[in-house]
Length: 187
Image 1: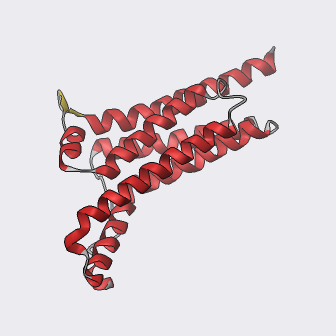
Image 2 (image 1 turned 90 degrees about the horizontal axis):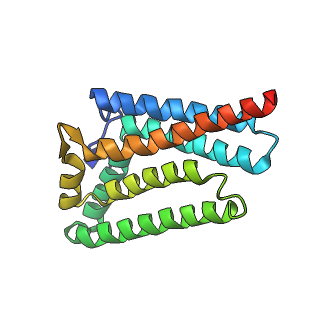
């Protein structure tokens, strides 16, 4: 079965915008980590920013290693081996529904954790929601969804806009929080 898997670890998106996106993921992850460190004495703030830093780091790694393609190839090999590859559309739909439910559950859990302080985390949560929405849309990857993501204006693709907007929103939120703690210390 392993010989049927058509995946090798390589650069998943070797384009300029692909590398820019990876740099933005890692830079934003670093900013979130620094924010977590600066707020280490406030348990909820520390946990939120640390989880965000780890999530962004993993997304950056995945952006270039294209790990989801490995899982797709493993799924395809298993489906062929077990004889249900011809019905893959049904299983793809079930996977997408499960992925959406997991994403929604995760966002609901984060919202519940932050229920008393949700206003405090509104802006970084908005960026996170943009990113999770982009990931869910990419996971769906039906033909009309792929068309939408690859479409755009003036050579700028919608998937770039969605992904970089989410990252940028979280990045600007981290910068805001870092400036805020700097002002609090000097006041």
